Image (cartoon, rainbow, N blue to C red; front, side, top):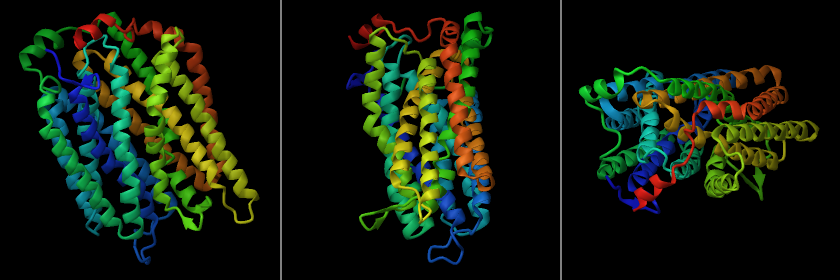
Length: 449
């Protein structure tokens, strides 16, 4: 069935784009202020919980792990009972309830809110990403570009959240910040429900008889098994990447607050605003990077997902070398603070790495995952992201004793090693995908006609 298109892509892409935009507004608003709220003094004008940095980073790690780890259950629930569309709606409701629970100054409600958000993201995140892949037929060359557009779009929400949620959370009330994140999620649910007419052919639960006759009764083929092996190996890369990347919301957040000179023209930049840098850079360079990768591939150069991940890991390593430069500068500065440009440069490299790995990984899963395990494999990916988040929290905790220079150096070395290993394994791993990444031009032409 022919789909209505906008800018050459199915209109359903833009419904999912705006739904996820508001979900990310909620998530990144929470990410921007959680550690700051936990460590804010109870006697301050805007009182927090008065936890130590180590305690706050430990909770941040557990929260980051479970908020993504629940994706594996969200994917399974969608595959077996609810379907992807209903899972997105139920997950959104959970997130809304969770955000507003955090507005109540009570520890029981605080933990209840975290649990609700964890369950909600677990249902929503993997299923909405799988629906993006479902908009494109097999072999459609627009799929990678579609995921990149989706990725750029949702980062608009991630850009706005720290500026609004962060500012009002830090300067007015932490609980007002949490409520703004909740209202953002309400907006996302409204977009999803009213845009449902463009999503009629994706995200539906297969009937039991269809599942049995076409999928469940059939074991995985040799090709499918090989592709699953490649996916599992890519998941190991993802753990290292997110362990590095998620330092932004934990250790780097506290480092920016305490050890970076944030004064610019007499104005001190709020710490939470640095959480907008990732999204700002994604919106700024996302489209040019997508074009460059496309141009690179059209020139006959290696442009497989594994190759892009290798490039991303090398660049992530360099970003932490920049942070080591910041630590050195702070150590020789009389004020004990690093110049702001180190942080700005490091975040830029974070995003170059991110755009080479994260949207590529999402698209990679929709290409390689066996159809009957589509949501489950996407959920597994987000569970792996969760493990990376937990590792990030553990590294942040370790830095409280070992120091930032040592931890930043360990992360830089780990990313560098993984990147070079991938370069050596590109051909072998690409062979195991059995042509899953090959574009079929006739499919694109048929769809456009």
